[in-house]
Image: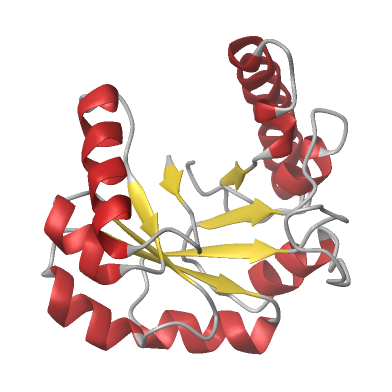
Length: 190
């Protein structure tokens, strides 16, 4: 779970992070978007940094060795730079048109494939406009997971929406494995 609120002041964001941490009780990881200070204060599982956010090495010094650091990337070059900087995973997008990033030109799942073809082996999560109908494309292109907002929160039954996405993700991952095996490529466990 990622806590993302670009408008909330630090103290209020910290309070919310602590409330979420207590509500989750270890059933999921909790990451804070961009605010390394809040992540440190709340002792959450990590941060998600934008492509132009704090440098990874600075964030690592602040967080310590254990918390995860994810970085948003929008190109193969950005992915390579992110891996070199020491990030633990990549948030790749924007896959499809999305309301949370209006005006951004979608890269499509092909960007995941190009990053994978560049032998970048960090875990990748697809983001941006992902739905039950297109998540298979994202997983087949090489993502190990996804990040969504609307696909879950806009559904009248968010729990059921999350379960449908999970099932569709598994189908897309299985297709990716079949394609890699057919091409004689090594299969990386997810």
